[in-house]
Image 1 (cartoon, rainbow, N blue to C red):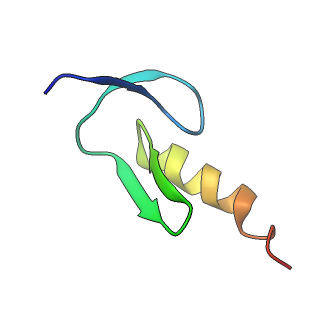
Image 2 (tube, helix red, strand yellow; image 1 turned 30 degrees about the vertical axis):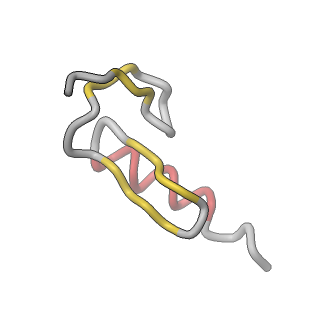
Length: 48
C-alpha cells in the first residue's frame, strides 16, 4: 500500500486510500467529496 495517485478533478497527488469512484469508464480517484461532486457535475451532460 501507499501508492500515490492523482485526483481526477484537481490533480493533487493523494494516497491511494478512500476516495475512489468506479463506473463503466473505469476508476476515478478523488482527494475530497468536493472534487467528486465537481467532477460529476461537469460530466453529467456528456452523453446526450
